[in-house]
Image (cartoon, rainbow, N blue to C red; front, side, top):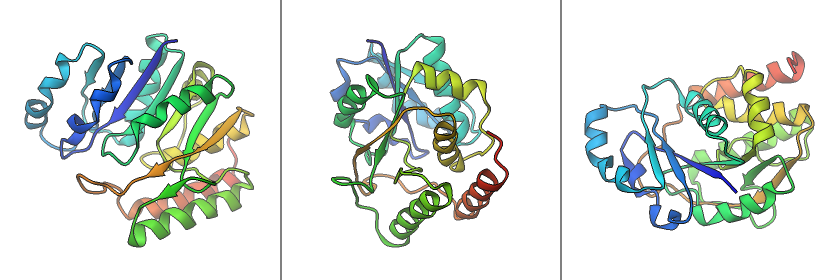
Length: 229
């Protein structure tokens, strides 16, 4: 089995705290979405390049959606069977990836869900309310059995990655995650939800702008009533 596990770092440079000690048995890659001066970040992350199983990918800031598209392209180019994406701010537990791999043997796409049995979110305040009711709204408007549309803790098989790259997802930034799920449902991809524990951010700050709430709302309306798929 050939697996690509791609971490997405934060501008504060905490990608080097990705619990890499758990990954000595995997070939892992790291996609960094730069939003701060590159040289300062690379000084902190230099030691990562000493890990044989890890490849550090750097790029200019083009939005979180373009970082994930880059991950899809990387996995296909290097002939990986599976791709698992997750954040590097310690909100996602890398130990869960074993469960993603197990489910990918029988499903095309696996998404970690905070809102099913045994799933949990430790978000606080308005972010918790927005996440919970935002996913409820998407479930309702898409008339879907899924309960989670927005987390980036996801697993893909090669078939799914090729389909996503062949058909351009129109939403950008954080709306991209929602549209990917909707697109896969519309194309009869076999989707599986598995419970995850989503921890409160232990390092760094949230990068999601409030404008993204309205963008996701309007993009969901566009998808529902002006379906491009």
